[in-house]
Amino acid sequence: MTTLIKPLSGWGRYPVQSCELERPERYAELLPSSARLITRGQGRSYGDAALNENGRVMLTERINRLLDFDVNSGILRAEAGVTLADILPVIVPKGWFLPVTPGTKFVSLGGCVAADVHGKNHHYQGSFGDHVLSLELILADNSQLTCSPAENIELFWATVGGMGLTGIIGEVTLQLIAVQSAHMMVQHHAAKNLQQLFKHLENSALDDRYAVAWIDSLADSKNLGRGIAMFGHHAGAHEIPADFGDALTIKARRTRSIPCDLPGWALNPLSIGAFNALYYQREGNKQRPFLTSYDPYFYPLDAIQNWNRLYGKHGFVQYQCVIPQHTAFDGIKALLQELSNSRRPSFLAVLKRFGAQGRGMLSFPLAGYTLALDLPIRDEGLFVLLNKLDEIVVQHGGRVYLAKDARLSAASFRAMYPRYEEWLKIKQTVDPQNRFSSSLARRLKISGDAA
Image 1 (spheres, one colour):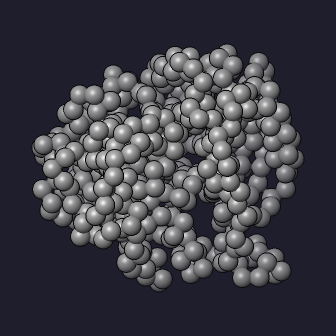
Image 2 (cartoon, helix red, strand yellow):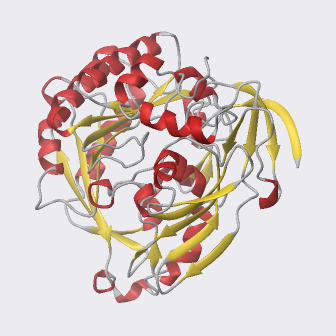
């Protein structure tokens, strides 16, 4: 096993912290050390969830074997370091797909469990943990425990969404969903403002298995919240034209790379406004259903390597929150108004509908709507704005996503996550010496440590 001390960050490139890295080469080396430790898959959490300042970070990227795949039942068992990008080429040609997927395929299976990731189909399929049949957890005393919705139940739901703080996730067994093609049938509906956008998303006649909305973050006044509601489903065999060839295969996408950091002034209200106007017109004009392969539909930014460099050398914060159903419209409107007033536009603003609350004790989803914003770091004024957004979220009964967070306060965390004390009791039982710790955990004081 190799070790190395180096500066490390999440995908948002903020904060940057000095960590001692260790990289196991095989499963047997997945053992907690005496030092405080956090595991890290592909580093696609945005803030400090997979950082451990002046502590140890275990890289699981080499623990990435596919162990078993039953093509009849769609049950997959794999080591936690395997990525969704590794899994998809294996399962899709056999007529299976991931039950839930985030917006990038370059994430590890263990990371999907630890963050209890969600997708565009949460209002139908729930979050990732709802489809995990079992997992192997390596505890602080080096013992291994099988956890599932039927075995070691409390520890299972403390680990799903537990941000890696209960133990090392070694293996995951996942139930896949059957598909007839590798393509999606998609329908777009333009909305002139937030009220119309909500009507689209709540219209049962428009709704589909997957639903998401892009928002023009610069629109204000009567156009506040204008955007495109996008609905889709896995295309059936009858929806695939004969000239498509094999319905379960797709062509490889061309990828491009951002070779260097863009200057800080590149993303400004003028450039983002021009992009938003073009995007609204182009996507809003797609008034008829159309076919696209799953790759650009679920993972549009994966075609641009190092796209986080778009935000400049100081990085960015992705702010993602959820507001419960009964206050969702007012809460989202208040957030967008605060953002508009700040003149700090988000290059990407995405709205999704959530179904039932996640069963993980620290899981992010709850029934309502989630808003995600990408905000470049230019000065301390951004953090003043984010504190205001936190206040709005708390006032409306919502919460911030820990996998995206880089600066939430401990007090705000406790107001947002009512099952924290329940989770903490389980954490202290299986890890009484708090050997699994992260910079996020200490900042939020959620595992017995002070920051």
